[in-house]
Image (cartoon, rainbow, N blue to C red; front, side, top):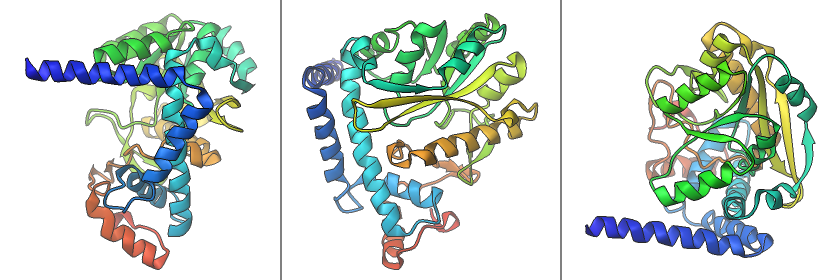
Length: 327
């Protein structure tokens, strides 16, 4: 009973904080989030876990960068992540129309509408970049769309976020067997399905596919949907041009190789496309996600504090990290 009470209090505290920040001016909230994240980036490497993860990711994904350049990029990326997470308090608690007024440019909408009007389904591949909640709200009114999402441990938080994400017409499904069944049904109806494809999937049946040159576990669901239903495939993302009130959404056709019948060819093309989009606006990517935790055929430990001596050595040399030397 005590644990249940503690969980209930924690959930209520989280919801109260979400609603409080949602009532404050967006400019203040995003500056607050950015400043807090920036402060974290100046903590010692042994303490600054989020900054350390971002730094390791950037050093491994951009080996051409010196340590100093990678450290500056990691600091900017963590600052932007703080800005993004603070911004979501408004996305999740304010009317969708208010959020969408901040979208000042959309590239590729006509091609997507043509695809919606065809007799084939549409597969939308999305990523954790900038204000990644916003494209879902923008595309909701365009047609039926099934969107995968990761559930939170808090039912109350799930309810708030789900209502917000479905606010313009999309349908959320959990990223599990039930969600896959719903996505297959949507494809069969020639509707749209949206998947965040830059996360690590569960299950050893998902293949190792290069991502920034590193073999990582990659979801094979996109290939299964593409090979079975032959949908139009687009990448969808966004970035902040001049702050949180100037969002540009982009919709781009995926490369032709993604339609390959060969699973590895399809998923390699998908990951290459993601890397291109990430590198276009690298400071606004969610580098604090431990995407390389399962890489090179095994579970890696280089996101833990054990990596600090390797980072200090790279800092001393102003060099980079070598993945085969890391734990």
